[in-house]
Image (cartoon, rainbow, N blue to C red):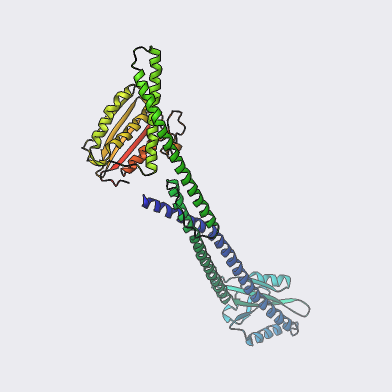
Length: 481
């Protein structure tokens, strides 16, 4: 049981951490992704823009220089372009091309491209508009990432005679962008790690108090009234601990007062009930009384016995609550005790037109350490409940079995059963649920406590096809509480 509780607690703690990861960390991740993406886009835009503006400035400066020296002859233009390429200082960084109006490269600082037709949009746009144009893309032949700027060359009269074009590889720029992206991602991952660590530390500072408070609350709900949680918290947790401690103390005081009151009233009721029962039994055999009077005295006796049974149950429960309940344990044959109880109760159930069907275990049940009187009390109470709440079912089946470590006793009626939402509470003291039958609502609570004192448990469930199934498990070598 403790292991199952620990596993449930661990699942709840993991659930809190999972919700933290799914909420806080997802938000942080989204922010980091947006920030890294924005930063990378900004770096890329800035780097490429600087390269584009540099090429644009260089192309404009060169074309302006050529405009002052180009005459109306193409041969002079060609010679000037040839000399310019021969003295081109940035040959290791850039490729300088002179392209004719047909789009073919006539001269190039990289001789391998001479005679080819790049066919990029910047060339066509420069020839058609007479304005400097830029292009970014990938080479069709090498697949390399390139950027180019095309500037129109004109005669003095404005006639376009060709295009000067600068081409540069973007490989270094791409490397710079990737490096910045990786640095940004690493910084983002570091930020997420810091947030996760801080979050886990904070969550632990919340989870541990919650776990302690939850465990104490479960003890209180389980009947350990009056327990106190160590008040070493100073924040809102401290306020909650203080409130729970006060609640536990007040419940304990109320429970003690209630138990003392029930015990006192029960003792006070026993004397008049004994007198009523005694005089009723004396009067009912008086031959001078008429039949109607005898019938009335019979009703008085029946109700007095019912009240006496309720008083005995209340006294029994108060003994359990204040620690005065004891077991006279000894090795017993639980099957024999059950069979004697069935024999004794069978005639009483016949009065309600009900029968008991007994299905003994195929193998002999081992002896257990138990109190026969207390166990019979449990058997009688289960028969009473079946007679009271399931009389329309007409029968009760009782069976036994063993698994070598425990003895199992099954009591099954065929009445309406118990609503599923009441099954967990039906063994609570004074709980009667939706039933309209009369009773103290304490019989099953007493049975449950008696079985617990034997180291076992009493389980209630609805059987297949209707009716209530009560299962008693008693260990063969129990540890008595």
